[in-house]
Length: 256
Ligand code: ADP
Ligand code: MG
Image (cartoon, rainbow, N blue to C red; front, side, top):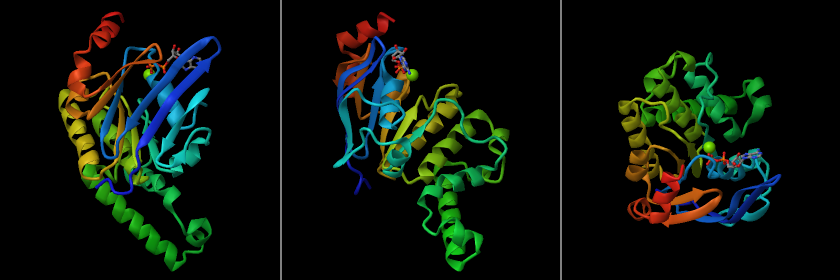
């Protein structure tokens, strides 16, 4: 299912703020259709890394490439257009709009006919609208929130809102999905459900996932590979089982 999904390559990425090196020559590769976890104690540089991957922060040195495409230095909307979608740690869906309307907005960047055709109610626009609605329903069913489509997002329990955000990101048909603590604040049952959906995104849709997550149970269950950061440096990289037993990793977490 990962046909057409290129590897995401982060090479020697350095980000300096005034007097502080948040990322220090960090390198890792996210293979197509895999879950790559990015872990490390608070302040390690995980969010900074996501901010560079999405074009919010500029790299001081190094590069980020999606296949042949250089992402370094591109503005956030261009990077999103190239297929990198992000889900934030805090809830971001407009609370009063229905979930369906929010998901349809997520498909806005895919719209070819444009506002003029839609405004003139051309048949092409109506066809496109029907296609988008059908795809939104399909994705909602995949994520398990089809019964929420007609409800305002803000009226749903927390776990369902988080799944609706995941659905909105999928509506952009991304190649790479960046998840920032997707199960934080969830009940045990919601965590299990969300982990299963994330595994499904990888296994059925073939999308690559970069996962920042503090819940080590979820990381160990989902990740195909792991990069561990500490004070902006990569201190370990490899299979979850190996990284978990790495003395440098254990030291970094104990030193927190
Ligand atoms: P993590 O997400 O792993 O907890 P962050 O990437 O948020 O770590 O932070 C890494 C380091 O970079 C921290 O020391 C943080 O204070 C610093 N930092 C992050 N963003 C900025 C910024 N915009 N300006 C200055 N320092 C920042
Ligand atoms: Mg962070």
